[in-house]
Image (cartoon, rainbow, N blue to C red):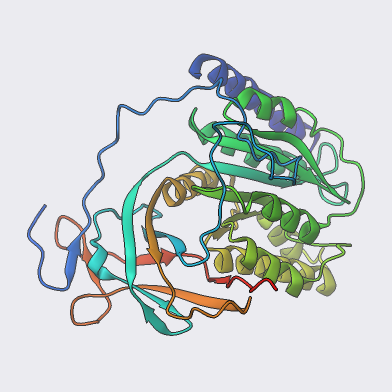
Length: 379
């Protein structure tokens, strides 16, 4: 085991060095009625980024967003317009472009809505990495310690120069290691602090809601990438309150579950008790729920080789989206939660059949937020 630890440590150290060097250097056919053809999307070679751009005005460390620098983007909430970002991915996690506006159907509380604005395109990502780093599972030199750092560094390497990223680590409480910035060196410097874990608590609910609350006023393509075991030990918030808070914030969560292979090994060799098994199963279900209800995705890799495809799926989903806006038919300002459902249909109202360029049908999945909280009338 010691030899394996040393090999992993050397490999992880090499990964960090390569990442820092990279940051320093980078700064069809006819279609039938009711059917659409998915064509490969051409890359935009004209995209450029500036690694020295300033931080976005709405800092994680400052919840008071009333005072912003002159000329900065305005963050506002349209009370009469609902915006829904939709990603349509095939069974390999690839974004399906070219679907016309007429094939989208949006329901709010089972009532069809009239789509007012519709667009599709690529855009930079604004990502907050929320990383579990507790002495409960991330003890120094353990396999879960390696996996946590490998997943975190690996995701950072996939970001483009124009993407904004912030890093938050949590144990008993969340700690902002680096604020939003396009300068990836700041994120890598922040990651250097993840060496020796402190407390043995892992308060997932509190950390996740805190990050989502700070991000909800940020416009554009934004997401939380959660790297965690999914277990919560001592949060002030309950699971139900966390679900409601995340739904209200409207920030998609992309969850990566840790220790899948290790858990299977312990379970197969009788080294895991029934209570621990139930705790981990519940943790996975919680992460799936958070991801699904916010319009994100959840992943549970068993091997390191699965990480690149996971990062690609997250990138495909976030960078390439259909943006839909509608004015809800329910004009009541009651503050209640309203469910949203997005479907793809043909002119006859049947499920849309999508084919590749060879005419073969493609299985697809639609990702969109589960709903939103209606504005409340202020007396």
